[in-house]
Length: 305
Image 1 (cartoon, one colour):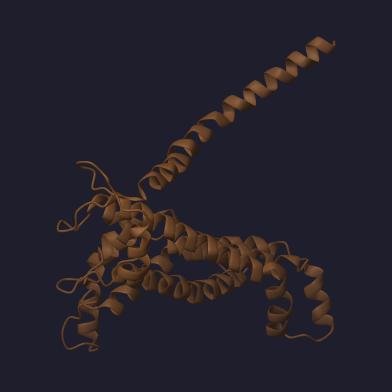
Image 2: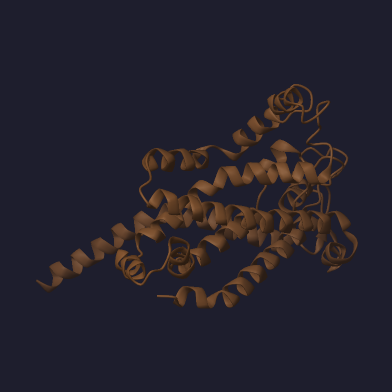
C-alpha cells in the first residue's frame, strides 16, 4: 500500500512537471536569456559586426547625461501613461457602473465595449492612420464638410497632435478590458449596502462616491498599475502610426530602444547592441521604481475590505 501511494505521488509530480515544462522553457528562452544577453553587452560598444569594444560604464553615462532623444522619448512615455490613466480609468468605471445596473441593452454594450480589445494594436493603428490621413482620410473629409476646418489638417504633422491621436487609439483599444475588471469588482459589492444607504436617504451620487468607489479600491490598485506599466511599454501602435515622426519627436522609450537593436525605420542609425542593452536595463529599473513607489503609496487601497 505504501509503495503504491509513493508511486502515485511520483507519477503525479512527473505529470505536473511535464505540464509546466513548456511554459518554463518559454520563460527561460524569452525572459531570462534576453536579460542575461543584455547584461553581457552593456559594457561594450558593439554593432553586431567586428569585435566588441569595451567602454565600461560609458553606455550608462551616455543614457543619463548625453542622450536627449532618450529623455524626450521618456517624457512622451510618461505623458501617454498619465493622460491615459486620467481618461481611461474614469471612463471604464462609469461604463462598468451603467452596465452593472442592468440598463437596457447592457449585454450588447458589454460586447461592444470589449470588442476593440481583441483586435491587434498594429491593425488598429493602421486603420486609424488611414482614417486620420491628411490627404484622403475620412475624418478630414467630414471635418472640412462640416465647416470645422477650411482645409485638411495634418494630425501627424506635429508632436502633440500625433501623440494625442496615439493616446486616443490606445485608450479606445484597452478601456474595454478595464471596464470588465471594474464590472467584476462591482458585482462583488453586496447589494445590502446600497439598500441600507437608500433607507438612510443617501442619493445615487452619494452611494457611488461613498460606497462604490471605496469598495472598488482593491481592483483599482491592480488595474491602475497594469495600465501604467502597459502604456510605458507601448511599442506597436507608435511604430505603425507615427514611427517616431515628425523628426523623431513622437518616439517613446521602447521604440527608441528597439531601433538601436534593429534600425527599424532609421537607416542612418547603426545598430548599437551595447547601448541598446544599457537603455533596456535603465528602462527596466525605471519601471521597477515606478511599480515600487506606486505599490507603496497605494498600499491602503487593498485594505478597504
